Length: 111
Length: 112
Image 1: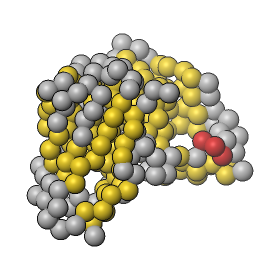
Image 2: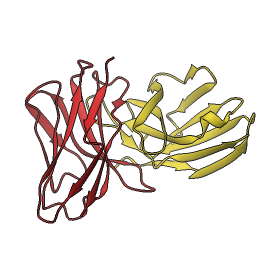
Image 3: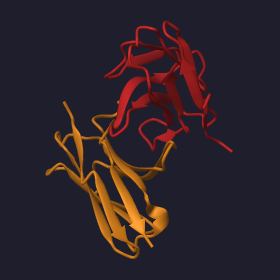
């Protein structure tokens, strides 16, 4: 079955640590996105990529980094510079401007 | 800057009732609009996509309308069921090749 796989489902970060969230898709989509969701809030865009080896910052990119070396993969690194990383992180992909498909998310907490 | 608002934040209805969820956006120059459903602790599932040139889209018991000039969209759910209980989010694409901007959602509870 085609879809988007996010791992791990739950992740804990220690003070000063960088952590990487994985996002893989087998839908052959060109565009991939990372959103952050906080309780009672809508989704806020962190980064997005329209093609391999290219990506753009979203509204809340500070403290995060991404790479897009392969079409299928768009990992997100939450760096120690992100002082409030506790949130639900959602990865999505689309074929151009068509329907957006989402993974099941990664919940990140601070130890 | 484009902003998306969904009112009410929460809604409770008895089973079988027809209902309307509202979405408004501040800039009428949009490329498309999408409605999503989110179950607790899960990702989002796309329900309907409306292109800027369209007025409505239908899928089963769901009907979404778009009025660009007034900056509004509605999601109509017919004959609601307990399984429809979820959070419904509206999102707009400002232009081709850009990411969606989301509202905060409406949490729907349908009681049997």
